[in-house]
Structures are given as C-alpha cells and as structure tokens.
Image (tube, rainbow, N blue to C red):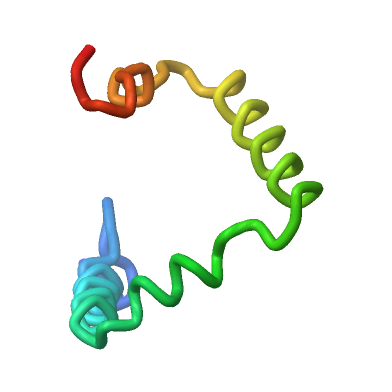
Length: 76
C-alpha cells in the first residue's frame, strides 16, 4: 500500500514544521510588540464584542483552563 505524501495520518508534519519555522522567524523579527498593539480593540464597542465572544466560547468549552482562574498576580 502506497501512502500519499500529502496524507500524513494524525497530523501534517511538513505543515507543522513550516509553521514553527515561520513563527520563529516572526518572533526574531522584533515585530511581536507592534503586532500585539495592532491587534488590540480599536474602540470600546469592539472590546465589548470581543469580551462577549470570549465568554460565549468559555460556555461552550468542555473544561476551563485552570490558569484562567488564577489572579493576575499569578498565585491562586
């Protein structure tokens, strides 16, 4: 039985490797801080929409990540 090089079973290792390389290149580019600022909500309405969507996603999640319940100081 011959396997297609595109079909990789549980995951596409080539795509994962390409993503990892692109991510590393982006991090090393020094553009992360600017990208984070650019991704911030542009106004209060947009911020509210994002928060509402996040809350809806949490309601649909099977188990909430315990890290999300920690206070911002990092201690439980």
